[in-house]
Length: 239
Image (cartoon, rainbow, N blue to C red; front, side, top):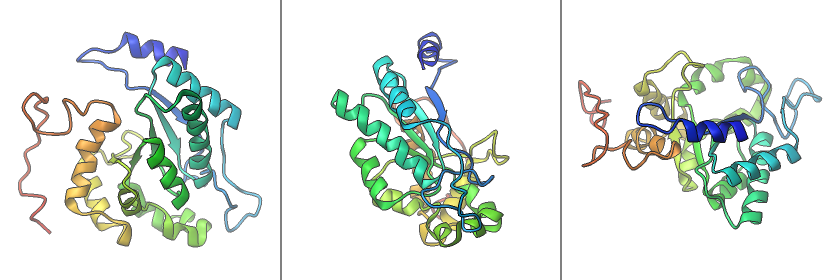
């Protein structure tokens, strides 16, 4: 954490900027290693993987706040989300709140109660809609059973008034095109999906919020950086 905070001070220019620290709380949903509160349907002893104790997470989050380091936490399973939130709550209680823009990333499965905790803590969230399609046809959908019906619920995040950024997960994920993300968020997640306008906001305005650059990125306003894409048609008007 101290090294990451030092890098944040050293790389803070217009061309190269250090965005914060990344922490893998659990494994990947795609490999069956997401940390779950209940075991996988085909193995009563398999709860997935996690890499830090509660004490470790408490210390990491507390130190990151002390040093002014924003964190991005990889949390796939519902148990990973809960453990991360426990750590943020401990630090928020000790310091009277959180000062950094911390992001919970992936959030494949999350309880309604934890959505409330995210909103109350003022955390950002980030999800990758293009992950949904292959996941729905893979082994995980079968191994999660009925829980998969509640996975990738983008709609529930916005309904809970939680800021939601959306990205491609490139280079881990082989689809770097932002419009694939928008299409997936709108078309591939049944009643969990978003409107086109909501998906575009998640890929622009909310994305800038997640990296602490909403003053100059994610919108076309006077004084913002001219990061412009020209499309062949109006995405709000096409099918």
